[in-house]
Image (cartoon, rainbow, N blue to C red; front, side):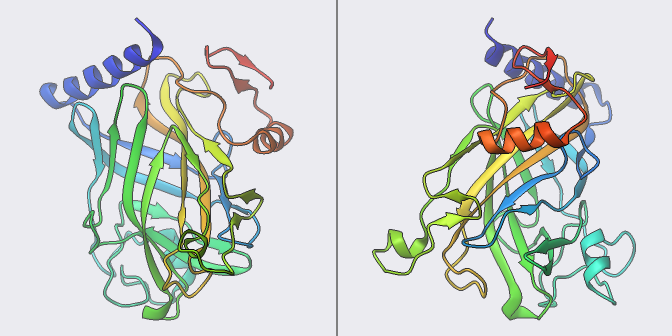
Length: 284
């Protein structure tokens, strides 16, 4: 059996066993500066420089089918727990973004995001196509996608609350051109930090550190909405490294993530060896 089929079979069997057996089906996803390989990198949007990605801990992620897991929507207003990003950017946390009407999914404990010197509150927002949930699906035996409605909040009220669809994958993404360029208009910014339109980022899924738990890298590429108050239409991209407490005994699917420059910086900064696709640990 090839690695893709083994991975698919393992996840489906695990998810099905948890659902049928009545075992605890929830697990936690971690992506912080203290994680293996760190939290990741946010590129752009547009001419803005690359930034260290904000921390996030996603709790109560649960299987809803053998190959689908969901972060359900949870919000209890001003009561604890409040997400770290809201605590850092608001003196009166109430569980909502600064427009006063978009509720935060508090199962995703997202830290504050400093983007080019501007503090942002980022989170999963209610009211969009996903109704505040985060949904992950194993698509084709070895590629996982993660979708949600992500919200960037500058803390200035409705004008500074920007919602955008989030489509992440452990496969590969290509940085798109600006919306302006695609529409044939001049003045589009066809880059995102150190990346230019056409550059690719790749993710990975498996067990980076060999501890028997699922981890990997999610990559995303998209455009800011044209009505955004900052960098309208400009592309952005990110690579999010994550760990979980979900047991995993399969093989790593995919090559080392990111760009060659990313991988060299990670190798220079990390005290850990990097795993190969076969699961052996060696410095790249």
